[in-house]
View 1 (cartoon, rainbow, N blue to C red):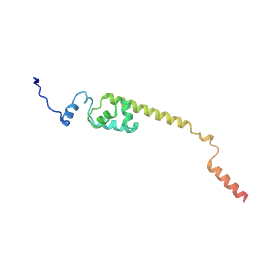
View 2 (tube, rainbow, N blue to C red):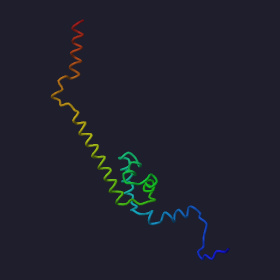
View 3 (cartoon, rainbow, N blue to C red):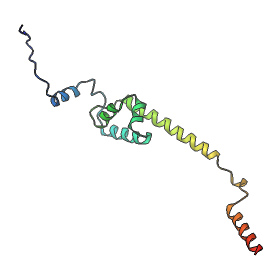
View 4 (cartoon, rainbow, N blue to C red):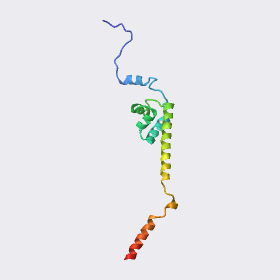
Length: 129
């Protein structure tokens, strides 16, 4: 049986095909901007890693690597979700700082200074000798 197909078929070569695939609109959505890429990298460091940022914006580690290497663009939605993750972490940090601030004993209730106790002990030792 012979094929009557008029469309020529060529073997896949790999590298060139990958370039064609990467240019598909579904994979190149978003803005390719150095400022966005650097902002995302900084956010990843502040949040604790690319995996945590990826979880926050709902993408896997492979997609995150693609965004950092400019193979995929960074959408406004990615930026908004990153901002929300940063603000959430900042709120947690500030809440924890406030909690720790509450653990500090006011100076007026610090009646016993360690230096004064040390001097009293040294004086007591000298007095017994």
